[in-house]
Amino acid sequence: MPGKFLTRLFVAAAMVCAGAGALQAQEAAVPEALKAQYKRPEAIPFPARAPYSPQLATLGKMLFFDPRLSGAKNMNCATCHNPSFGYEAPVDLSVGALRTKLPRHSPTILNAAWVSPNFWDGRAASLEEQAAGPISTPAEMDGKFHDIVPDLEAVPEYEHWFGVLFPDEGVTRENILTAIATYERTVVSGWAPFDRWVDGEENAISEEAKRGFLLFTGKANCAACHTGWNFTDNKFHDIGLATEDEGRAALEPSNLKAKHAFKTPGLRNLTYRAPFMHNGSVPDLESVIVHYMSGGIPRPSLANEMQPVDLSEDEQKELIAFLLSLTADRTVNTTPLLPN
Image (cartoon, rainbow, N blue to C red):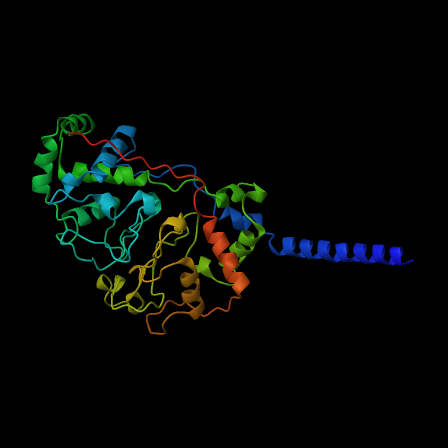
């Protein structure tokens, strides 16, 4: 009799556990239509004025890594947009040509083909315009195109390929920027566990990450700004950080909501991209979530989307599990051999 009782007890306990597991799985069930909103695009968009070619992208990559574009020949674009750190810099504020800290954290160029306008404040309408800024700004690379052009012309391989790709013009400021921008458009974050899950591989991410995705798109309201496959609305928001930086207001002084507003960053490959925010003031993902839970500093310019939210410790962990699933399974970054 006791044996039968214990058997019934174990069976009942197993049914309870199975029921709890089913409930947990149900909680993590995600509508296919919601997942589809975050599906990766099948092709990179290139402007008609600068269609893709592997030769042009390769030329742009060499220029991206070439210190001859800087005034002192000691910096390149990768100085602040390092592939090893998600095409950012692993410090709060990047250091420029004057060996002083710049006013903002380096934004990533990952998935730049889908980002417009550019810079934290959106002051550049295109990648070509964006590339010109850091190269020629004295506090950044301090390059001067009237020096850069003849320097590149003096390199036989550069002279050859500019002649092939731009037969009527050769090395010019505009063609240098076209090549760099073309390369930057090819800098696309690799396939991540999240992408495999969206494509139907149900076990590609954990149940914890799936619940994090539901929080991201629901209760936590992160998707109010972080939308689409690259997780950005390409708009500007004041998220309530302690900062004196006017942000987008420098371009829209009459717009109250533009004060302290900065571009929504994409969220791909976050594992490599700390610290976070326009000023690098938030050291890790845990602190990012704590900030958003607080709702930010209340002020007239604070984005309407910024509202305090109460997340349990488990929910915070679920959000982080989801965010980590956005990092590519494999990232291969090769540094080009520069011509002499």
